[in-house]
Amino acid sequence: MIVPMLKYSFLVYHKEYESFLNDLRDLGVVHVSEKQKDVSDEIRDKYDQIRQINSIIKELQKREISTVKTDGIDGEKAFEEVQSLLLDIEQKQQQLSILKKEIQHIQPWGNFNNETINNLKDNGVFIKFFTVSIRKFDAEWEQKYPIQVINQQSGLTYFVLFHKEGEEIEIDAEEMRAPEHSVAELVMHQQNLENSLEEINKKLDKHAAESIDAIEKHFLSVIEITDYKKVIENTQKEAEDKIMMLEGWAPEHRSEELNTFMENNKILFISEKPDKVENAPILLKNQKFARKFEVLGELYSLPKYDELDLTPFFAPFYMLFFGFCLGDVGYGLILAIGALVAKGKVKKEMKQVMSLVFYLGLSTILFGLIGGTFFGIPLYDTNLPIYRDLAVMFKEKGTDINQILFNLSLVLGGIQIIFGLIIKVFNEIKQLGISYAIGTIGWVILLLGIVIIALVSHFAGIPMEELKTITYALVGVSGVMILLLNNLKRNIFMNVGVGLWGVYNMATGILGDMLSYIRLFALGISSAIMGFVFNSLAVSMSGSIPVLNIVIMIIILVIGHAINIFMSGLGAFVHPMRLTFVEFYKNAGFSGGGKKYNPFRKLT
Image (tube, rainbow, N blue to C red):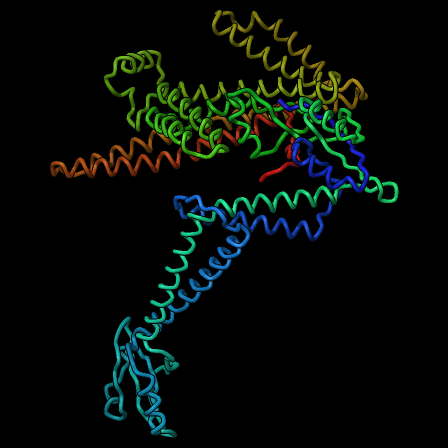
């Protein structure tokens, strides 16, 4: 449900404006309207600073160091120190990478003394470095010139030649640039860099333990400053800059609190309900179950203010679809129990997510029981009484659980599509009026009618031939609504053209949408097959050595099922979301684009 909003306009004397804003921020109710389309350079710089601080906090959190409460730490100074340390790490890691390549390049030349080389040069003896393939190295070179072979590796011979200045040398080999440092010197430099990196990491670990709370407070304070500056920039100055006018939004259920505050502070204000043109900020308020799924809806888009909130409508479908895709009792138990344990340990903002995972785990258990899979074990192939009897019954009826699950995926898809069209009717009535919803109502009547007639024919044993009069009446009534009455305020010929185009889109669209729901069955089958494969691998690769074979089997099972939970769980998360945001949202007439309610408030 979208919480009703009221639009407020405040008029404040300029000398009292700063005090008014501070009090308004303490109240934390008003979402300030943004009048300026372009963000100023100052605000843009603040946004960059916020991103940098947030990045630093995430870097420290990745270290997974237990925090220690320490008073008196300057969050801004700690942030700057951490930022400098991370920059230093980046530079040293680049140097280390270059150094390792250089060591690898000169490794074949071994250790040598640069001082000795320089002394020889001072005495007129020069050294040249050569490489040549081993098979092309000519032994006569060693007779003709003072040559010393240094190394042979990777099919190359590395050798040096001593000569005097001006001496002619005829050797068919590639001359190399003389190394500036020996391997020993570079290795020592590498060790110094690695020691330096270790010291920097120790400092970062100390900050992760002691400074992260202070940096987070600094992060919130920068956001507060940014919000304050944004409010100033979105304030209109009237009466020769003597009067400050600010516009914003507040939830209707908190209007009395806000009105009392304004009256006590003698602030002139106007409050009114938004018209259809204005897109008020969105604050969702759903019941306990649907509230867990709000985070999923926000991944796509919030509804517009005059739309229906689809969260409570897609929540049960998403939960069922996730369970359908993962569909394993064992995996569901891991998700549900893991979510319950984690819920007591995670931060407040993550508790809703853990509750969501718990619900998804329950759905996975349900479909695991239906599909008959427990950690990849096909229960319908076992001698468990219920599953054995069901398998026999299915066989007698010429079907099996896979065919039933395939049909169930299509049935669930059909239910969600028709349900989405029903939601679309209410959405159109709410936004435009009933005269614009008649065409959609016609489609709902047609599709529901066809389904009901088919079910009556199948279960009551009535031939379709006897129901054709009802069918023709159904098609006639719905056809008139779809083709002629789809918009009562439009020309009838225009309605026919639009209606025919809608018939084409609906006919092709519903077929494509229905086929999309087969992915539920496909993902469920692939998850079960992967689990079965890992079980088979564990048995076949464990060997026959007592005790050791059990250990190997357990290792393979743990790793294999962990991979399957991750991969199949990822698919079970993404694909139902696609069905929700593409098929369901489209059929429900969702347009979205709402902006989240974000009141001007204190954060520290």
